[in-house]
Length: 390
Image (cartoon, rainbow, N blue to C red; front, side, top):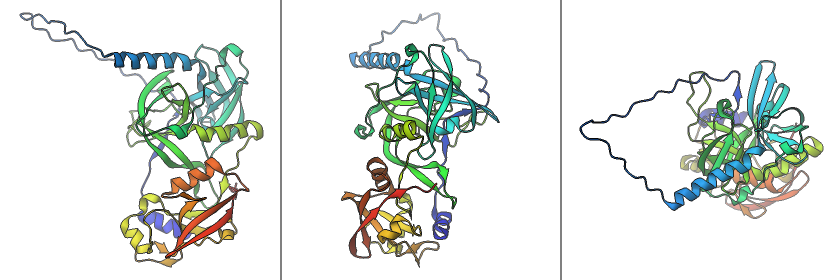
């Protein structure tokens, strides 16, 4: 990992991803300012009729109906910690009273309260957490009249440009609804769990959206226009903050894809944990694969996952993958590593493609065939996945 840290220090970029949960007291509301319209007495104002298209009316009705249908399944999470308190959003997952939210919302919680839209409140017990996906499952004892599970969709059917809706409790404003689009798919973020050498694992296939997400939205649902949950809002990328120092939306939010939720949550309910497949490699960040870097590494392809390090004794080393070891013309950058260009015959252009395929389709103990470029040669290597180290 020393080589990897050198190159990261030399040419890495800073990604400021801020969790969209809210800690501490609520910010004070600023007084509303009203401005009287200016009217010339000599020329009385004439009302101009507003023409609204049938399409606009239809969309408005669709959004209003969606909101009314899904709101009973969206809850507020109140957490008491040693430092004070925090809050976020959650969704009703199933008829048994399981509630889904972010792991970082309840992290360090001594007491957890779930507040329903009807006004009903109940204490919650923690069933399981997964720091890698930033998911947590709670359990409440509530009347069946309060339990309204939301419908889970299919995040693989999402397309960039499609409309999405976030509903949650930003800054404690319960039941707030915002509308946006899918800005991008297949984003990768660091998980909440550090490994022994100070690095982190990755959360794959994240949904990027411009639907407004702010502190308090964490753990809340991201819907498609059919009212299906396609993601759980996790974080925002911003360099702006309000007067109390809390991060504010800049049009770049991230949600955990629902297809990952469908894999992780049942395991958390049953076994209180989820095991991720593990390869045992470190790779060069895809956004650092500039033409200058590609030439310095002597790569014959411009896309793929460049292996910088192979964990000793890990699945990749046993499969014969080769990490970078020879100094290149760029200080801190080492050449000689394998370039992964396909997994099980599926093209790999960036790291997101590789980790997304593994998390969505594979489990510890499964085998995958990696196609790598080693110099000018294409080599197929069979790798047996294990579980991520604790």
